[in-house]
Image 1 (cartoon, rainbow, N blue to C red):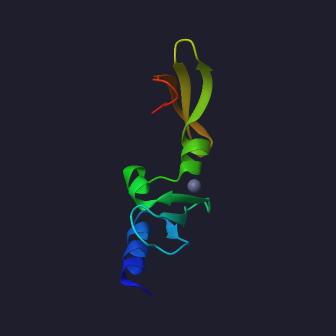
Image 2 (cartoon, protein in one colour; image 1 turned 120 degrees about the horizontal axis):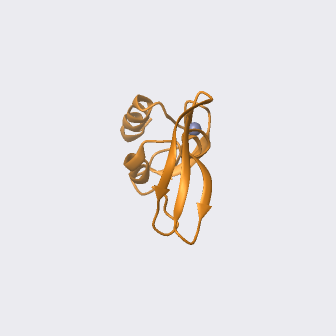
Length: 98
Ligand SMILES: [Zn+2]
């Protein structure tokens, strides 16, 4: 196994992710799986910005309650282990919420 591959497997496992494809470079897409066995494809460069599984991020931690296109105000709820931890309003610009 190439050294770069071994180094990346170690780096990703420290964040709780498994590398499922071969690593070439920062700009080449790799396949990862998270603790919840979600599989997703991302470049390492992009992944390092958030270090989060995009599926977990969308389905578990943040749930959009409502979106008002006219004011760009949306609601959010942070839910962990089925409990509502926090909720409120988010102001967003365009289509980007965070
Ligand atoms: Zn996940």
